[in-house]
Image 1 (cartoon, rainbow, N blue to C red):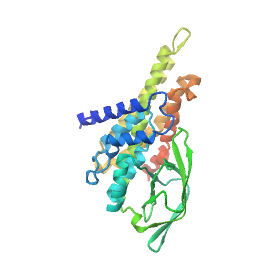
Image 2 (image 1 turned 180 degrees about the vertical axis):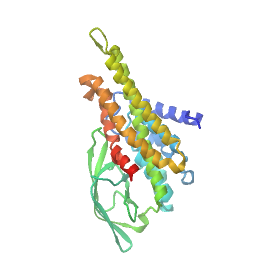
Image 3 (image 1 turned 120 degrees about the vertical axis):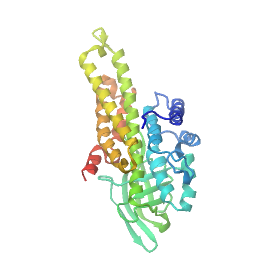
Image 4 (image 1 turned 60 degrees about the vertical axis):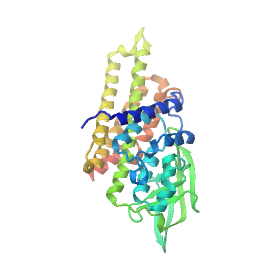
Length: 349
């Protein structure tokens, strides 16, 4: 096993990095979601086809490729639907959808022409019920946090029991979205289902283990994005303490500052180690390794962001500096899929 990317993986990383350097300049990073035109441009580069199996027309990438792209997005503080749309929903539809569903959605997802949002479950996310009515399923209730839900053309709605997964088009009668912005400026929505009837053909038939792996792959993308953004905040903080002067000297010369910056480095490197451990885990241990990475990185990212903000002083909490915007971004990412506490509960179960 080697921790170094292959030549193809390095080319993928560099391609995405150059793309983001042109589309997400530092002054715009971490302010709002990537425009749809730029999202479609990523699709034209083949990035959005990365996680889709080859049998469905995708590139068949695995955890390494997903992590490379997600970490690069994090380094640029680019806010995109990568984890839930291009990874999770695309894989779920590709692996469990029927021919009609794959034909209608997979090419559109890989090209960036359409967005499918994931309507997940979790404590505090709202109540949503589903009942059988003849040949239809009837949905009633709401989900309070659906990232990119206002821009979605369809939703993959998850349940613990049957039907487990339903693919519901946004234009279905009774589906309503209430858009809002998260703490980091990213677009999200409350999605309400008011007696929504969907046919049996909307069900995505997938057994438990493949579904858990698809979910873990999306969670890996979130972890990698956090690690990439942690790297950016660390580098910005090191540069700041080198330049900022107090009492005639750079504050980086003070021992207490050096100790705090060293702690940032430890948090970053331990987080990267947990990410790599998940990326290179054997298939049988992949979902557990991702959960373990979430449990550590979600907490470490917030600790790093808090210290980086404090080391920048009062300006650190403003919109003017990337460290403040990055802090808010990490605040959102670290709470997705139940956050660190949810991951620890999964490990303890």
